[in-house]
Length: 301
Image 1: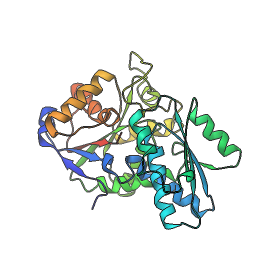
Image 2: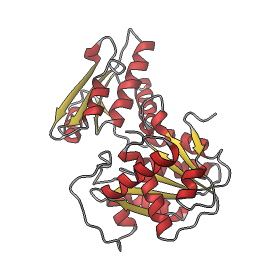
Image 3: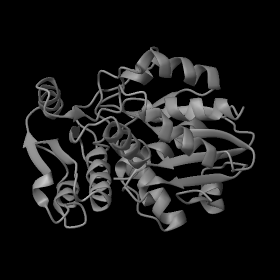
């Protein structure tokens, strides 16, 4: 049975004029809060087995929440040898995410084990902490062990009959790469479409340099922040190999996608999650046809 809900929505498919089934993969219902729960807990478990006890992470929210919940779960089982976690978040982090991180469901009763700091440059602070030897940096954008969890996600999606395409909100490209590897192992080849914002789109630009776009300084989809994208070259290759492509979405399109989902499903989705629907809508408008089922990944807040 899939870890998170994957349900088809005929009314939403009809509204988008899709002839086949349209599924929403609800990673926002993951026990660790988002699709980052696929990778971060596995990374922590692996490094804990290797002897690491102190961890650090820089995050826009979702990865930090997954890490905090994973640390909490681990420490409840290993009370005599608990792990510690230092979280660096940006000064402009979404307030709801910050409240979630500081909430009672995240911090274990020995609250000193999880420390949250708002800083100007979270990524740099995490690097410096690791460089000092004080903690292991949980960075899924460059960690190959992070791909394993998304391969598990691919096996869940493979249960969908006639799966033909998946649309993925994309920052570093780790999810897309992990899914590709997972599908390859089970000899499936759905199209992989990555969706980025007009504030951060290095992978789509590398994939489709002909696109013209009015760049924005910020986006409603605030989790899409990786402008370096170390996996860029690999992700470009796998997207092309899958027969998919990349899409760049602005705030207006994000808002339209949120309204569309609410109208035809009753669901409230975040701007980050709405990227997948917005990308699919743009693909249809540009004449893309899909022979089988299409999946939009609802990543979480």
